[in-house]
Length: 432
Ligand SMILES: O=C(O)[C@H]1O[C@H](OP(=O)(O)OP(=O)(O)OC[C@H]2O[C@@H](n3ccc(=O)[nH]c3=O)[C@H](O)[C@@H]2O)[C@H](O)[C@@H](O)[C@H]1O
Image (cartoon, rainbow, N blue to C red; front, side):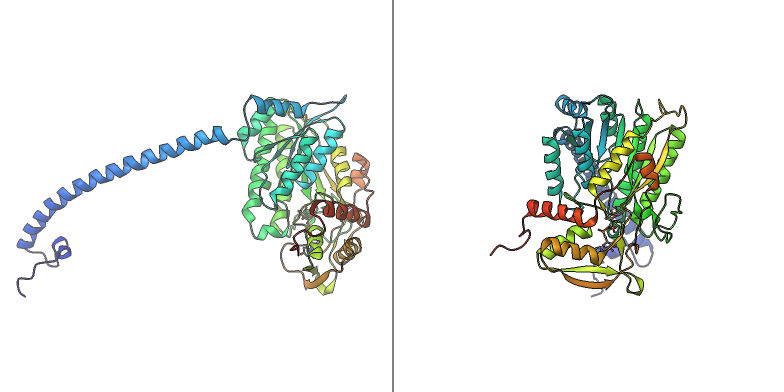
């Protein structure tokens, strides 16, 4: 028992120092040295292996960029140029961001139909069913509008687009929309509504000639404002959601580009836009789907059991407001990234001026669908919602000739007609 061999651990880390142990430690050191030289070689080998792996990876990714990039090349440039061609006197060539989106697709079509040049840009993200975006793209394509599939944060692409086409206008509608989703995915709002906006502004400021910019702000910037109807002159420093805060930030960001670089800016505060080809995440759309599928719908209710209300605005009216804004935008004044004089900076409400409560919205849908909704009425959770919205549109009426003509009853009828023709009556229902 007294001759017990020391364990390897004991040999390497002697418990008590002593001559013998020092000698052994010395020998151990030599052994260690010889083993560490092996380790050194191994480490070198691993390092070389890692380096070659990474250089291979970058080769593959740079290679695949050329192989899979959805933009670039002679054919692509030709498509962009053709799509941007103007077919009317005094027409404009417009870069529409978010062109596969709800408002973007409608505005693109309207511009194209009246003879303007339109190039679309969209990242086709999956915030909601991308197949709907693809269907809108197909519709635009048959009408001669080409959509580039890319993100507004892609500065190289934006530079290329301005290189290929001297856009007179940018209709900026790409955004992360949705008030309540901001609690689930806050970063997506920063990515699209802040970083993406700045990337686009940078491209516009550098472009020669600089385009005039019309872009989508939101009624949500009024936040907790209680003064009705909401006027552009009201304070907007109490946003109730991150979505609203990023839209408000957008108004400030675009102001600086107007101030420093002479970009012509028009911000449009859209009020709960609805209609055919709409966004499936919005209440009128998801209610329709759930009512048809026999599922319950959740109807939020405000404080003291007061119904929530929105100034629901029909898409065709919004399109007219967008086109009116483009037509009256005035020119950007900068060139070579330098301001040459003051340029317009405008903000307009685009609403309907007649708020309707959410329970009334549901009743209208019931009558058009001829199906009774199964309503769950719950108190509004603290999720960024505001109790009501109501637009004062006198500015837009005066300066853009904006005059909404579609009430909710009529607009929802058109929406339901489209919904049934697109999805069919049995959408999502198991077929027996
Ligand atoms: O004007 C805007 O700037 C914004 O308009 C839209 O936001 P909102 O006005 O909130 O529309 P939307 O979601 O259709 O809810 C409508 C009502 O239904 C209530 N609502 C909603 C969902 C539900 O399950 N139940 C319910 O009662 C809900 O409480 C609300 O009272 C756009 O989505 C947004 O991107 C932005 O553009």
